[in-house]
Length: 167
View 1 (cartoon, one colour):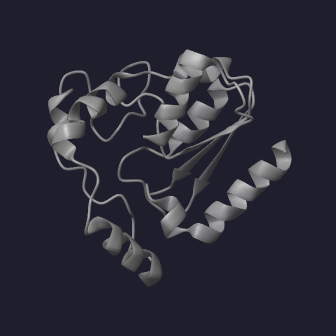
View 2 (cartoon, helix red, strand yellow):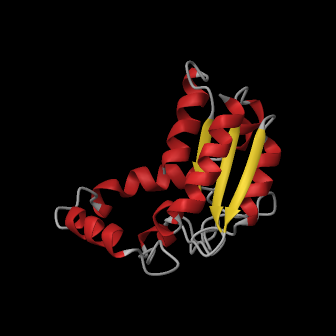
View 3 (cartoon, rainbow, N blue to C red):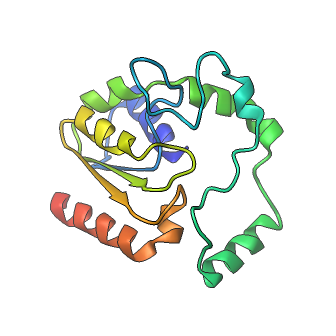
């Protein structure tokens, strides 16, 4: 939900010292409808917000590298995320539509999607980038929602290319 957090910040405070933004596999509108077909999984106005109580399943498309997996396992032994406590935040997050904020962004936006994301149709990346004045997008192959963990070299190349272009 990092991209939505930044969109919310920009909506309330403007860009301030933000020089650019990278959205990693996060559609600006979670609920699919006739104006935006790129929502989260099968989330619609009809099944919202009950659908958000269902397990999202694995974020990755394939098995993670052993070193990454071991690190994640150690973190998950003491999970900080409580689905019940955070449900109201998730509902609020899913209710938002950040397309108007993106259209007014005066800074570069890179939207990176996983080609095999279990959460979003990767076509959202191009559609989102087209909303922004300085929008670019990349779809990383053989990766799901956890694309920076699944394809770190490809992700880092995309990230560095974006940073070099706008620095």
